[in-house]
Amino acid sequence: MKIEKIELSILELPYVHFFETSFGREHGRTFILIKVFSEGICGYGEVVAEKLPLYSYETTSTAWLILKELLLPLVFEKGIIEPDDFYKQTQKFKGHLMAKAGLELALWDLKAKREGLPLSKLYGGTRKEVSSGVSVGIQDTIPQLLDRIDSFLKEGYRRIKVKIKPGWDIKACREIRKKHPDLTLQADANAAYKVDDIELLKKLDEFDLLMLEQPFSGDDLWDHSRLQKEIKTAICLDESAVSAAKVRKAYEMQSCRIINIKVGRVGGIIEARKIHDFCQAKGMPVWCGGMLETGIGRAHNIHLASLPNFKLSNDISASKRYFTQDLIDPAVELTERGTIKVPTGPGIGVFPVEERIKRATLKQETFS
Image (cartoon, rainbow, N blue to C red; front, side):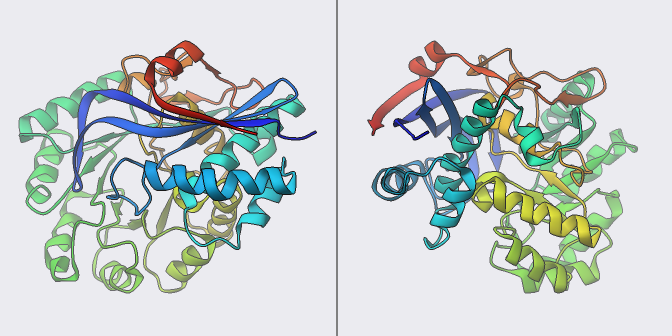
C-alpha cells in the first residue's frame, strides 16, 4: 500500500458563543483539515494551530507551509504509510508539533480503517465512555459567567473549568463557589501570571479547586515548582507539557501533580501515549485537553481519552458546545451520565460530511 494523494484545506467555522481566555476573545476558528488517501480509504486529521500565535508559536499559515514544503514531500519520498514510521522520520525536525500531529492523526485514521478497528483499539484504550467536562471562557460580567455555568450543569457536565486572568480570578471563583459549593471546579490561567503573583495565586486555595492549570509561561518549570510547594491546590501543566522528556523533568522538579495531554501540542498520538505511560507509572493522573476542535479532531481526542490513566474529566464536550452544525454526522453528544461514548466504528468512527466541509473551506490544495 502507498499514499496516493494528500489534501490540505483551510476551514473556518463560527462559534455559537464567543470564547475568551487570557489571550483574547475569539468568535470562530480557522484550522487545517488533512485528508490522506490510499486504495479507496480516506484518513482524516485536524491541525489545531490557530490563526494567531497566541497559545503557540504555530499558526495555520506556518503549519500549512511546514506540511506543504517538508512533511508531505517526506511522506511521498520515503513511502510512509505507518504512523510509527512517520514519527521516527520526523523526530529530526525541531518543533512544528501541531503540523506533525495533524498528519500523524490522519495516518492513524487511515491505518485503523484499513484494519477495520476503532482507533481506541490500536491505542490500547479500555473505556467505552469518557468523562466529559466543559471549559467556560471569560464573560463580560460575573452574573453572565454564573448563568453560563448553570446552563452547562443542566446539560449534565460533570466538571466545570473556568478561564482566569489577572483581574478575573479571585472574585470569579468566590462567586462560583458561593453558588455551587460542591461543584467539581478547576481554573485555567493560560500562562497569564508571573512569579510576582504567587501570593495572589495562593488565595485560590480557598476555593477547593480540582486544579490550577498553567499559571506561568510554558518554558517556566522552575517557578511552577516554587508555586506548587506553596499552594495546596494541584498545579496542572498544559503549555509546558510538550513532550515526554519535558513531563519527566516537571515530575522530577515537582512542578505539578497533574498533566493535561493535548495531541496537537505534543506532536501526535505516539508522544501522547509516552506521556500517558510515564504518568501512569508515576501515579500522576492525566486528562485530555481540547483546542475547540470540530467533531473530527474531537473524535481523535475521545479515542485517546479511552486509555486507562485518563482519570479526570476531559475537555471533550458535545458538538453543540461550540458549533451550530459540526462537520460530522451524527454529532458528538453528551450522555445522561455526563460522558461521551467512544465511537466503535473503524478509524475515528464518525462520518465527516463533505458538503459541510466544502462550505467551510477557504483554501484547498492536493498533493501526490
